[in-house]
Length: 346
Image 1 (cartoon, helix red, strand yellow):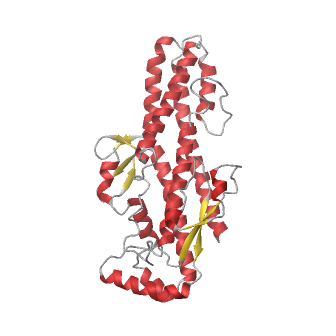
Image 2: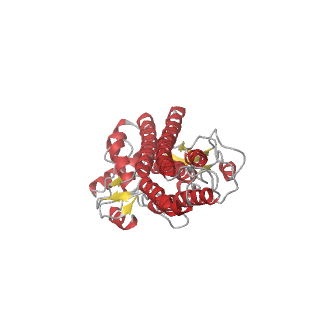
Image 3: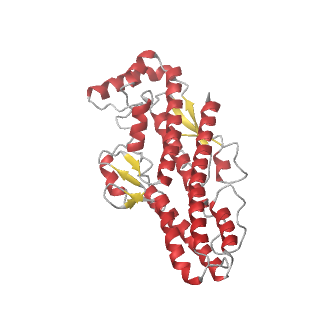
């Protein structure tokens, strides 16, 4: 069964890359058409057209990543006061779809494990349930140390919205530099159009050059998407595992596609407590994943688990567990503390 869930996750990754490729192919078509229209009768683009070309194509790049949110500002997402997230632009819609699908797979996997291993009365209690923290079988707030994808802050202090803004700006600067370089050298519009297509279309043969604009304008966007989807899936797996009283630890598993060698090799097949598990993904493009490690003393846990669930329910502190798949995913996407949402997305 684990292989099946893993295969589904890899399919989500492939589907996301196809969506991203289609977005950049559309950008390439627009840019090429604009480039050819700017050429003179001899097929050369005059230097005086450089700024206008950069502005028009650059604006199109930014619209790929950003759109007006509910407050009339340009942003990748609109976030309602209740924490509901609406992607506003083509790139953020494709990315959010991949994040949501990857998280659902992890929650469904956790729910299937609970369905198989938990006794019927405990499952019935958990369908209103709560989740665990250190020193206790359960805690009334499983999301206390969790940030949903749009609120998570990376080690550099950036939210997902910030990271998308940065990627949009980097993509635009690369294209600006490529256009300026080609026009300055007097290259034909046809030759520039061919290079621009390879430069923007993922999966095509890349433009191999030492020019300052690099080799692939879509690289940053594709890397960001893969990394964010992997991170959201890892977070979903961890929070869902905490909701199962019989999951004791997490095990780091290397992806079959993992190259040799990097920091992931030092984590491989080791077991960690929830609070000690290394940050995942460990690096951009990381495809490693987690496995739940079941406790050996499950019988001893049962009575304590039942007592704690009943106590939390009496205190009206129920929070959905993975057995309620849709509600649990909604919690993960919106977060436990939604009042921070509007301030975090700017």
